[in-house]
Image (cartoon, rainbow over all chains, first blue to last red; front, side, top):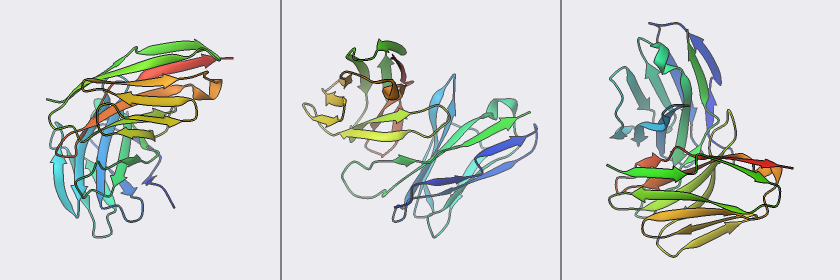
Length: 115
Length: 109
């Protein structure tokens, strides 16, 4: 079974530009969550999408947005990039339903560098 | 607000020297506690889910335990390939995951 895939794996942008990252979840998974990982802040939750609707949101500015398509694939967009946005962006997928605990499986991440 | 604290921040072990990592947490409506392993530049790799106090899970040289306030990840007779950052996360009632800062384990041959 294929795992979570993220594209691109590496990205270099300059301040003020915008960027779109893509995530394809494990087949059958309907929930996609996005995280930002930096050495100083660790893994921080951005948002979660389930069945094309944003279900949860972290404490990030409105420059960070996302969406999910009918095939559960998700994209994350960051507008007006700042130097502090340099990070590893991780996508995780899960079934997203049911009363039992829902394990999230992570992709390899997209390394974004803002110059 | 949900909080997860991991200790120590870093652990240097000799091959074969067993040790434990700690994860203490406060969360409203715990659905589960997760352990992940992360190698440099890669995404976290799922290890265990623990659902209730008293539960234990084992995988090769790793054993995870859970109480009402903390979890331990025991590494028995570690090998150099066990070197990684180990992350603990708790899942709240709304399915959100909150991560600790991680413990970086280095095992010397």
